Image (tube, rainbow, N blue to C red; front, side):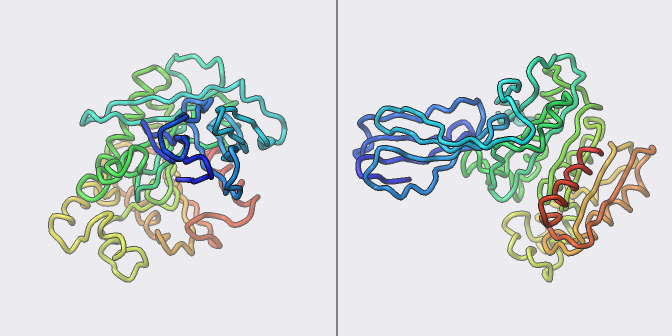
Length: 353
């Protein structure tokens, strides 16, 4: 919460979205919720140093609205845009559409998905999609503005975020239902997002690309192994793909700290459950989508040999001649290249693929 002389602001979540509840200090009178202009968005309250004021300052963005500094009158509900980030080269947000939908997972759960695309897009099943997901550690994937995706949207892509279990978009329960013995929920949720895009005629299986990094690399890697026919291309960035081997090595910095996230393979039940979804251990002699693996040679969280081993094993076992590529940055760690322009070059590699 944020406390002012005459107001209290509660930070809440509802239906997967952040919201701000504003009232007088009794918590009841002059109650209002801040109304946001987009169906899916990110908002966070700035440092409000003035105690005796009726103006609250926060930052707001969406997949199509650049980061904006907002002054909100807590008495009247008036919303004033103080500053909106400029997009180099010109940008008209009215030319883009955002959507927020709920898709039905295999166990009946309703999974939120955020989408953005260029206005005028036809639902003819022919649109290319880049579907992103993470779903681990209780970290929520917020639908914030990212200039990098604009070039995709202008080329007719749909960009989507699957807010799968393992994050905290729908509360603590959402996190608990996406880890340990429930980790497969993250994967089936993400698969349901892809199936929704196909069933609602946004796209088709060969037109859907999926991308995720670290634990999100596990997400997209596991989905590729489970449903290879569902995707056209997969980008695994610094991916956690060899679950059993890594979690069996206590000398790796994150292993023992994360037994409560994935399980401890010294326990038979944990071992068998992790083995049942570990992408490295479940490769089959079938055709898989084109795959790009990226890694950093100095990565202390997910070592470079995980995607390297996965690439070698996949090439040995899979059928067909679809691409399996590995790009290793020999001067980078888990977060990728340092420097503004090298980071953009990595982004270009992903989009070119």
